[in-house]
Length: 163
Image (cartoon, rainbow, N blue to C red; front, side, top):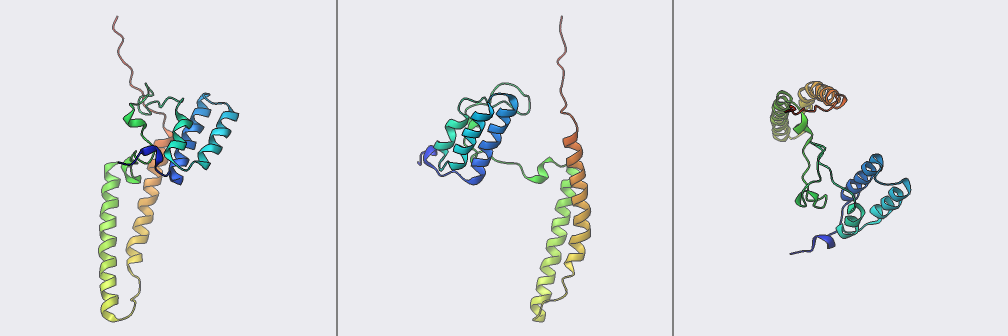
């Protein structure tokens, strides 16, 4: 089994560490000088072992509850943590519409490719008229929903006081 600390880090891994450092700077956990020094080291890091000490003294708060630090398994190197796709944050209705749009466009492109291949030349790209307008409307709706959700303050649930 390969030692995790000797594995090569990607640009995305380095960027995630820098984002965590930026968050610590904003929280007042790092001074500007510490942030700049650690950021330079992060961008020069070649392995996970080079990245690990940069955040070792920083707590990893739970973004959902704002509560205590995550478990050791949750603080694995950035490449091990999965990222949700763009559609994951959308309402179910929009996810279904995106799926239907993708299926319709895929079928139209396959039909167009078959017609073009059978005819021996590229036919007029009519699937663009299926994909374009409906895709643009779905994109605008998805962007509006995402922007609206980001502009709303996070919902906090109050615990009843017994006393």
